Amino acid sequence: MKVLDKLASSDFAPHLNQTFRIQLEGIEPIDLELVSVAEASSASQPKARHPFSLQFLGPVSSQYLLQHTYGLEHKEMGVLELFIVPLGLEEGRMRYEAIFT
Image (cartoon, rainbow, N blue to C red; front, top):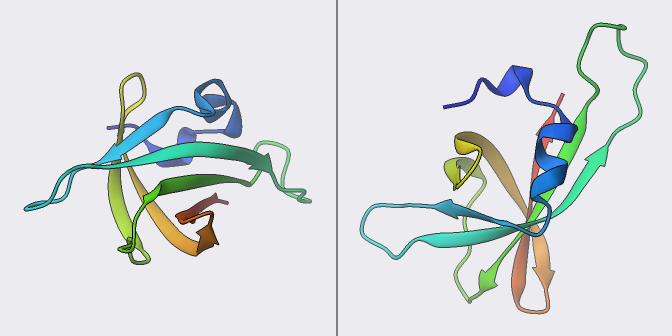
């Protein structure tokens, strides 16, 4: 598992439009597509990580993930424990966001 405080937006950018899988007990895996990696402007300290956000689209479904920490598995990045927040529907797919500060 990756240490989240060491990750930067540049770690995720090469994986844009790729699948991150959530495995929950008792249901089929849920695939989220990474659709946005965005740097936030900040007046942070020079050695601090620049804040950034990730946005994912879930599958077309009438059931959605709740705001919670989930293990998102990627074939190259491994398992990342991310706190994601549902933002709203987009063409039948829920948009989720994870923010790194």
